[in-house]
Length: 400
Image (cartoon, rainbow, N blue to C red; front, top):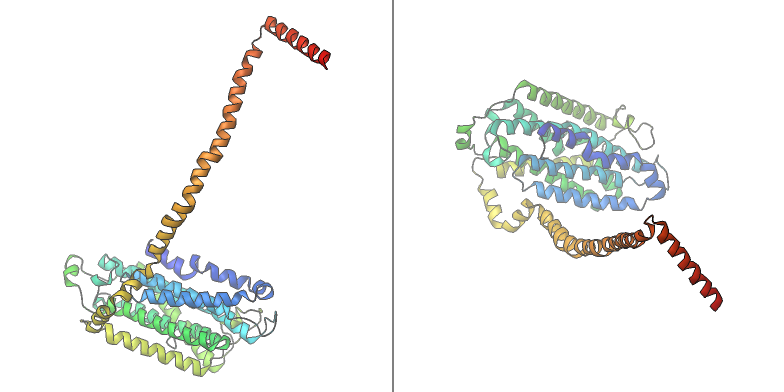
């Protein structure tokens, strides 16, 4: 996240951060065959991570940090999808339950790559325009950056899970697989999907609507990014919409040739069939979340948001500080690991280990110094040592 924005887009969209998801998917037969009980751990770690990252994203003010925690949450969605892919009987990869979760996790990895790359590159255009990552220095940018505004909005709709955008199909299939695994997991993931829609439109309104920071804009008048930056946004947006329309219609109409035709747990075609009830429920909840974000953040003044901050200052501060994860790890590493573990080990290493080998080296050196006189090269001294040794040996033998 801290690196150049194009690099962030590449890493968050389809490479390094999703390597763990691909590893589990690639080795899925081994998980099912030898460690099926571990899949439940994958599910609940994923559920916790998705909620934690979404909660943190709701309070961040750095636009790239919001997108970074969004990525963590979306990766957790993929992990949950793979985790709920337990077959109906041992090793049965053709089971529909396993097929659905597996396909949905990989499908979301595919769709997430499009809209998340577009969001990060859009953030790059915005930062290029206002010379800052902070939402406080933005607001009202829609009139200055129409292309970035439209592409960013479409990507927000995609990640929120609105029909006819790419994120809808994959996220709906994940939630369907979660409900098949456990209604509790299904409702929790539906709630986290609602949080996703909320924090993304909080970000959208904070950047493109809200109160314009005219004082900051006097020094750096916002402007649309050059074509070298906006053309990739347009291309990714077209792909996001195209894939969304095709997969949404295919899911409702039962077309073949869906994503399951390319990637499935068994290697055979798996056609998407939406559960209309789950799709409608998740869509309504996503729309309600967007409406809530619109009600709170769209206006130039934000009295409701300010009132919420004042009502729950500790909760907001905790979420903004990522629930003090950095402070916890600083305490654990410095006060416990370094002070209680590393320092004694370092003392033992310096005084015992190093001392032992230093003593051996000193002993070898002193022995050499003592024996040096015996190797003087003087034949007379050698004769004296020879005669002395002979006499001593003779006396010992006589005494025995």
